[in-house]
Image (spheres, helix red, strand yellow):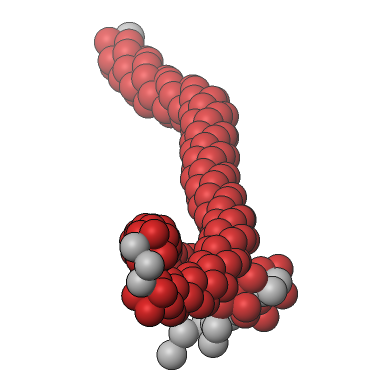
Amino acid sequence: MGIFTRFADIVNSNLNSMLDRAEDPAKMLVLIIQEMEQTLVEVRSSSVKTIAEKKELKRYMADVSKGITRWAEKAELAISKGRDDLARAALVEKQALEDSFVAQESELVELESALARLNEDIGHLQEKLQDAKSRRAAMNLRQKTVVSRIKVKKQLNKKSIETAFNKFEEYEQKMDRLEAEVESFDLGRSQSLSDQIEQLVVNEKVEDELEALKTKYKKAS
C-alpha cells in the first residue's frame, strides 16, 4: 500500500509533518521519493496518451473540414446543373459534417484543458519531488557530517587516551628513577656498613697478632 492514495495527496502533502511523525525519517523519505517518481511516470504516460488523442482528433477534424468543403462544392455544382435535389442532398451531408466538426471542437477544447491540467500537475509533482530529493541530499550530508564528527571525536579520544597513557608511563619512569635514587642511597649505606664490619675483622686480627707478639716477648724475657 502506497503512502499516498491519490495524486492530490502528493501535491497537498506536508513533508515536514510526515517526516516528523515517521519513526525512520530517512526510510520514509526514500519511500516518498519512490512513490512520487512512480506517480510522475504515470502522469507523463497519461499526458502522452492525451497528446496522441489530440493529434488524432485534429487530423480527423482536418479531414472533416475538407469533407465540408467538398460537399459545398458539390452542392454548387448541382445547383449549376439545375439539380436542386442533388444540391439538397449534398448540403445535408455538409451539415452532418459541420455538426460533427462542432462536436469535435468541443472535444478538442476538453483535451487541451486536460493537457493544461496535466502539465500543471507535472509541474507541482516535479516541485514536490525536487523538494524531497533536496531533503534527502541534506539528510545524507548531515548523516555524513555526523559520522565524520564521530570519527574525529573517536580519534581525539584515542589521542587523549594515548596521551594519558604516555603521561602515566612518564610518571612511572619518574617514580622508577626516584626509587633508584633511594635505593642507591641504601646501597651506599650498606657498603659503608660492610666496610665497617670488615674493619672490625681486621682490627680483631691485629689485636690477636698483637697479643701473640706480647706473649712471645714475655716468654723470651
